[in-house]
Length: 279
Length: 261
Image (cartoon, rainbow over all chains, first blue to last red):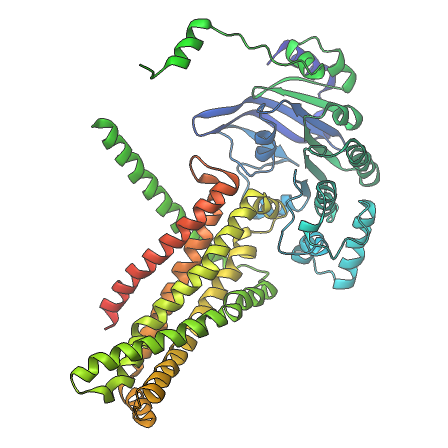
């Protein structure tokens, strides 16, 4: 753990009874390739935590681990006092119903309309009658600025609309925790700002704990209560927006200032790599 | 030399791994049949897709198969002066063998390929992750309706194929070769026994499981396809699913025939 992280944790670490999500010493790998190394993270109730990092830093892998879609090689993830890696199937299903996930591309089921996609969790997990489900769906669609798009198929929506429809589905059960993967990726600046506002409104209206994974600086600085910066599978700094901006760690500063990573080239190794196998 | 042995070993391990994966997949699908809530609406939709929408190709292929069989049998039986047996020859061939096999091949071509591609795309677009995160089992919600629809539809399609094939044989035998229509039908009624029908039903059930299992399983594990991703991986698993289903189905046909004849 870096000094910066230790310092920041001292200043920012929420007290134990506030913590909703706790990640302890998490390692994760794809086969032999180690992606996450010793991740320590905590998220308190009602907080917006942004996990930020460059491409290949391990953001999506961390998210997959937190969602229980991937088993870590070491460490534990505790959500709402349950260790998601050891909890039994029934409890995990119960926990999942308190979580909403908005995927990068929306991940709407392509075989059904936008409305049916949003209604799906309610139809599967509640005994509500169809008219109540329809009203709730329309409410969420209104909130996402998607009124009137209920009967369209996902293939008829634009990228931004798909994200918003995915977000509507993620919050239809009024979850306690919302995970949002790359809200701004591939969107125009205006739509991106609209989505950021939507995330802030959701927290305000529903007091959700929100974890956002992104590499978009502007978006992160707008919505975050705290930011965790990932670099090469490690969290190098956790802190408020001001703390991140003021951080003197080169890896964080490079990310904030959009400075490309300096590649040190060993001439001999480079040459031998190029000529490998050649006569 | 060693590298070839290494490659062979690696290939063997990956085949065993895949068999294990697909075996586990089938087991999970079968056990998920008993999970609730049951997707009746999706089941009906899949029966319409696998069963009803396969009707045109089953009708056409059944008709032509029966007609060709009648032509072939007429030629052979005429050499032995036994053209009267054409009805039973066509009927038995269709019910015992060609009906189940041809129906399964048609379903592989039409349903197996599209099901595999659809499921692979769902995997690529994180739709299964989304279902899992919504506490909805992808096995129960996506796989079970398709599996049951295939198990219900394919034996019915086979029965329709058999009937249409017999009608095709009748058209050639009676209208082209001037055989007696009554004799054609009577020999079929006299020859076909319950065990022949049972063979047709058992084979079509086995083929239904094989076709839908391989199509869904290959698509579901598209992300584990080595060296490719995205659209290329979808194309590759779809081709593999079609080839693997056809070969496995023909192998199962031999095994089933050897037990049931």
